[in-house]
Image 1 (cartoon, rainbow, N blue to C red):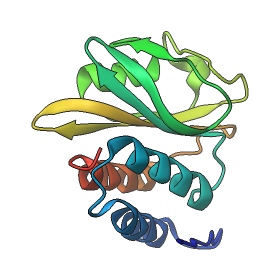
Image 2 (image 1 turned 30 degrees about the vertical axis):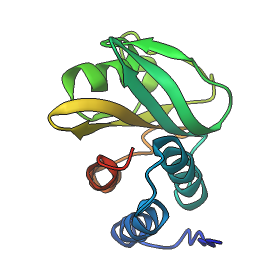
Image 3 (image 1 turned 90 degrees about the horizontal axis):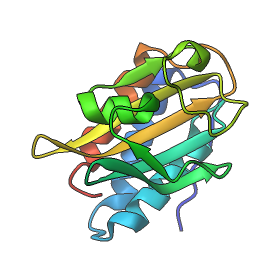
Length: 160
């Protein structure tokens, strides 16, 4: 059994070191991609404050398909290039969005979301999934969050 504790006073750099260490412990040696994504979504939900959605969309053909997540029910399919997730996948670039209402073509799955961070997971130079994080707080995410989740995406690319 894993027991990870949330410390809201932890500096972000230290928080993401803990997230990476826990993610490595949870996924190391486990070959099932869905199980790994499920545990990672739960881990992020537990450790990262001020989220109202945390999870994965998997790239299947020309679209993203909902994967394991924590939060309210979500859009099941997102075409590449549409919304924040589809844009991140199509460009293979992280999308850090301080105000989702200002993002052209934003797809609102939860009306409470105000900011979003979407990080592509790349394996063999191909986007295989995205990590999607939503927050009810405007400008919730910054460059430290981006760096932390990009490091997580790199760690798990061969495990999901």
